[in-house]
Image (cartoon, rainbow, N blue to C red; front, side, top):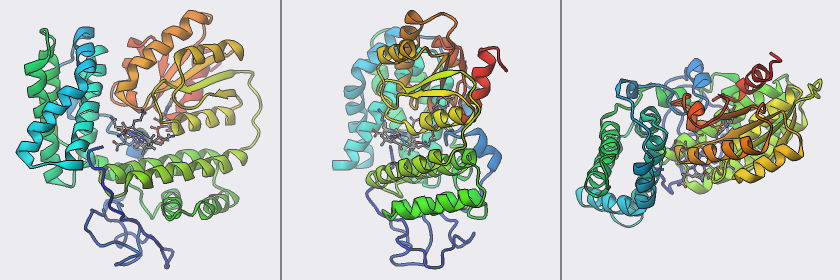
Length: 421
Ligand code: B12
């Protein structure tokens, strides 16, 4: 996170019960009027531009799926440089952050935050270089730039941060491979934020499902899970399909909270609160799911080791169940050997693995290889999640049979691989 802030800028109440466009469709920055406290009732952080639904559909991760990075040269896979970057991530980040601190007068918590951000950037860079995917790194950097895109000073600081890391990597990393790392970082510093991104991931209160997502967010940010679940139950009673509840309400609501978090409009605690409350809403939705005609296909699903993001794969699991699969959901941070063990124990017909960040890709490769080594060679392994959004070709390089970035594509991909399409 570059924008982590402890400012609280969400609405405490919405007496008018209204998210009127224009009135509430605006980003809230720290220091701006606080709705519900010292200003008109509104939900913060909603972009002025109505969202582009097609873009939302294609960028379900909330990250840019294409962009200027397409202009740059590919990079060759380089294990040596990747390992050196991983080993040195914290110290390289420390030195780069010190340079940034000097240039920008940073100290205390700000400095620590940038140090953490740069260490994660070094790990993401390591994964991009290990698997030869310049597109992934540029996609991640483009998303970072876009997420602070309405704050020019933050964009400029982010560029300086990428340059500072490039300089340290150039000086300290051994071997000729460091030139590739320096190049990717330097290119990242020159990327333009993808202007559509902020609008594309924002919710439009004029759209019925977006509005429901806003109502849920409003309720959970007020610490009111009961109201959130009641909103959802009412919408389901009124005809909202379970599939749309997952894909058009809960998923976008979480992506929106990520955007607000990234922009510094909600705190980490508020994001945690929101994710936690959404689990309750998810439980209500899955309870309301119609029983599907069984297909006799068993799927083991898991977020790879060190991936704490399990809501995406939970949605994938629930959608597979809606489509008649028997699902064995293993949740977050699952060691490779345990994925393999579950695949054997439950006689899985397919395994679906989720990775949110680039630094999870090595664990994906490891999981694929452990599962392959202990299950029939015909068992399809499908990967997906945010880590693949900029470069779907990565799936093949990691040994998987297919990638499906969006949850709604999982069923079709599995059926195709099993020859049952
Ligand atoms: C909630 C959240 C967390 C929670 C996760 C809680 C939980 N139990 O899930 C916590 C607080 C733990 C967390 C931690 C971190 N997070 Co986080 N997190 C988020 C947030 C806000 C929402 C994630 C989410 O649930 N999204 C909604 C779901 C529905 O989307 P999804 O996961 O992408 O899944 C969809 C598709 O990708 C797809 N899919 C997913 N998996 C699979 C698998 C298959 C097989 C298929 C077919 C499809 C598929 O289906 C889903 C539905 O469409 C996102 C913001 C965002 N834009 O998503 C950031 C985000 C993903 N996190 C981010 C970061 C940086 C982190 C941390 C590194 C932060 C830190 N300082 O420590 C850590 C890393 C932790 C770790 N080791 O994994 C960044 C990643 C940026 C990047 N580099 O690309 C994001 C984008 C936020 C941001 N603004 O920068 N995070």
